[in-house]
View (tube, rainbow, N blue to C red):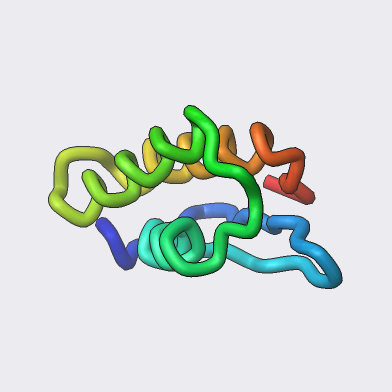
Length: 80
């Protein structure tokens, strides 16, 4: 599940570029190592959902929904 590609990738607006995120694993990497925004409540929920997906406690689509919410919170969502 953690490496399962989402049916539709997410495009995230970053300073000077756009990032394509296709899996919970990519979302986790970005949340942990590349998130350039202030972490808010949705960020924390997204990180928990992505890590829970790794453990098999949430689905890839649940992790996707949480990641989208974090991107919306940061006003960084380009396309879903």
